[in-house]
Length: 526
Ligand code: GDP
Image 1: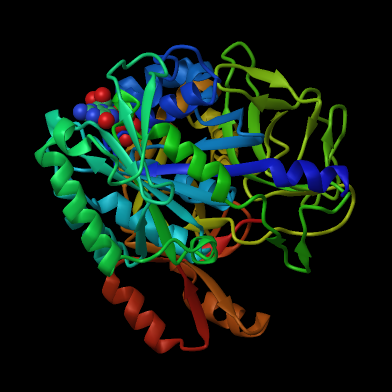
Image 2: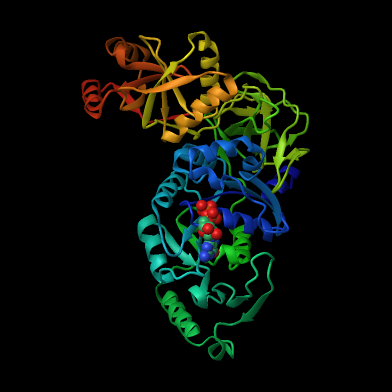
């Protein structure tokens, strides 16, 4: 087997997703703890404040060093190399989440046992489904009174429309939560409650092992009844169905108490797919290929406040990235100088010596790399599927000092390449219209314009209901449409034409009148 393939097969690259407060941060921390990446819980902090208030978020962004190391983490476990990608909890940053999901091979979904399936869980699931991303489910907070486990499974199956196979089942709940029974291993894992260390775990083999009834009484009887029901009506675990995104193995536990986390991590490293082939416009790229390729799914500015540079997060798709390499940017048609690529360890970042398919590396740059960029060793290939979403909210930017127009444009161009906002320049006037998915994004852009580019700006309401990218079968048709509707047409940062509808009625009427034109609500980067 080639060295690349051997390394690729060890990689498990996944995102952890949940509705805010389900316990994503806590579980991440515990996974790192069990993975031996950190000694004591409490190391992963950071974005917690992000969803509470704008000012917190900004203060936090200034300590970028913390938030960044928590967004990509690598650690070895079970002979595998795990790459864990965090996704921001705040809904205003959902675009970031969507793009992160394009860079992984599987996902781990955390659900709060009391709340069940929540709004953002549903949205995230929809995104995973676009690519049939395999999903493992962790039902958290069983140390609290929650819904009955059987009801939770039912809810996941019905609301998220995916088959569930429970792998671990709780023995008791709330204050009586004693541990879990592993259905595939036919073994109980019983816990002692030490939050901060990987606690001793007592195991007992066999569902009907002697002494269980006397020791656990009613909760054991409940478990027996539930397991019997599951065995009659449940779905057997099927690795192929999981890998195809049709079935989710379900683990139960309590992240904060370390209950059920190790079993989850074992199942995950055993079953989750290693790096999968990736589609480009021209061909499918296999991870085992010798030549390096990858794409950028996220850009983060000013990780180090002393240096005004940006870090592009690149997912390696094939071959090896070696220190000192200047990867070829397909968009620019030339190699990009990278002085020191980073790999993100749990509590630290280090220079990369070598990175393999599935790994995420950070490339420092001064604005030469944009979201969606594909990299190779010289081959012209563009990875597909990195989405740009039409925003829902719009503002007009007004400059306080007109002499700063150049800085403003530069700032907005860079921020749009990072995916912080979308910029539209109408064809017929000098306005600049910004689009965002959530209002917090505007606050951030305004703050960063001031802080990083020295530009004071005001954002005003603007009569735009939605933006749709325009396409037609040929240039002439498109041009005829543009000439006729010039007042409502703008170019986005990449020069693509966009229709800025003033209302939903305006959009549907224009659509009806021009069936020859397509109005798209997503566009692929690149
Ligand atoms: P996130 O928003 O999904 O990242 O959630 P956090 O990890 O920040 O958790 C949200 C809250 O739930 C915090 O107060 C945690 O301490 C708490 N929490 C997390 N896991 C558990 C658990 O297993 N049991 C209980 N009772 N609380 C938990």
